[in-house]
Length: 465
Ligand code: BG6
Image 1 (cartoon, rainbow, N blue to C red):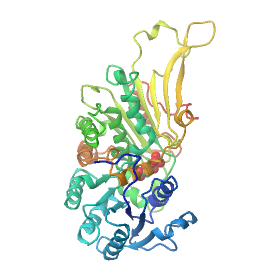
Image 2 (image 1 turned 90 degrees about the vertical axis):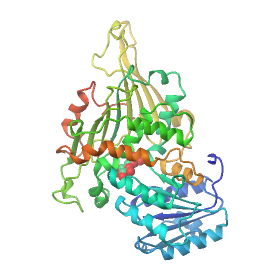
Image 3 (image 1 turned 180 degrees about the vertical axis):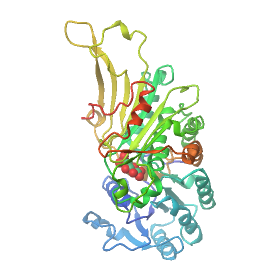
Image 4 (image 1 turned 180 degrees about the horizontal axis):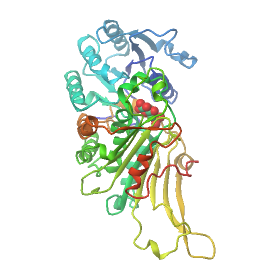
């Protein structure tokens, strides 16, 4: 049985592969410290960092770790050498006692995942029935590699022990999509093609490579963001109500939506590369890696027939935003009242997936004054301001969930295989890569893609403040 969010996790040995990497430094290590400060770590725990090379100096770096020094250590390991790590994990497990668990966090590139899983199997003292594995996205790099990886993982771990992480699902506001949809008579009845004209999942980033050239050259925007984060969020928007909040029911509902996805093709996609990308350190001067994708997806289920799902993301763009927009069809009586601004957008339900989430419902209201005409305005909910903070950052939330064995906000192997399968035609025949200026909204063709179905991209807007 899954523990509830208020239970204390069992004692844990956390093994962090990629312990000196970017994700560990930016998210995982600060996240663990925050969980400790919030009293959400197990009563007793150990953290073992691992990687091919020992770090220079103390690990984890930073004074904030001083109170935890006797719990933390670093042991080198590689796909063909895990003996020292096996001994270290065994010792730590003995110290924590019989109820302890091991959590392997694989913060390694897709190509390193499988050899590392085989190592966990081969070395004594690592994987057992009380251990769990967290696998970073992208899970594989196409259908064949994802299937292969699923098979290899299942040789060592039962599916119940496997946590494929997609941290966008851990964002507070991603869960608000579920809360708003299913807990409100205001929205649930209109969440279908009769009332919804278009859906957008739009994640422009101002960041560039941030020292991740080798990962990014191997991955590109489609694999890094679209088939992973953006598709998962689309799943939350598109799925039918799950039978319950049991992880199996939620995963079934999401997989069913993905099963109705029409295969992605180049006719519905725009790829871009920022001008100057090829001159970045570590990038092939003739690189064909896409740093921008706009994709129009279709879900051929009764609920969504002919409703475009527009997904867009890119590096070095004009803004950092993570916005889900559900554009509603106009009221049949929209022309009854004159409009102060004839070209305003239709009603929209907007989720800003920030750590400090915001939800907007764009409506038309009477413009103050003597005339009976309407003007756009937003019903705006600033969740933190209205309800108080205290939410966990996505990675913290998900690390805590893994320690409790709660799989709800993780992804299941079959969902991922379905997404790769639908992506296959686009991976085989991607569109031409168009240049775009850093600081822009990507190639103009992406605007044309969105505008052919209605009012175009919601962003840039003026409601982010
Ligand atoms: C990661 C991607 O998974 O998500 C990065 O690898 C991206 O390229 C990041 O920048 C965005 O995450 P967040 O939480 O900052 O929106």
